Length: 194
Ligand SMILES: [Zn+2]
Image (cartoon, rainbow, N blue to C red; front, top):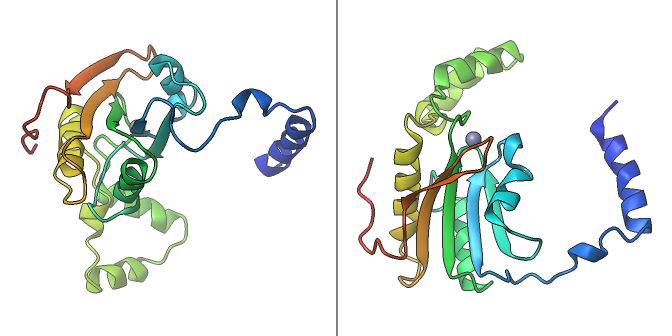
């Protein structure tokens, strides 16, 4: 059975019993914080618990690897909206050890699309159209370098105000222990490229 059914069943009870009451807040983050983190399932509850974040405290943006791959993509736009519309003054990029994006390579990934029935000539067509699938699907080799790189993209974005602190951290996916890679409040110089 699809999870949709289970979730809708739970949802009906949740709403009817007023389960939402303890989560009521507004759209402005209480702690003036935005967090970019990985979509890893181990961090669904661990991340806010390890950071001491409650509902309403922070804008949390997640993707595979906690990366900004493009300065004009949706992650960067979300961070800018957080800062310019929603009063965020501090950004934390929080990747994690043992991330599935470490060592991701396009060849293996595209092989799986073929196993799922995507015709190989479609991939050839995309390449001919100038889409660099190898670059687009490439993960990272070193998590700290990836965090530094993403902090740098955010820091150097032409629309990001200078006074916003951009931090980079790595979290342990089991214990939740944080390691600071870039302290944006003291590191005024942008991190060097990886
Ligand atoms: Zn991850």
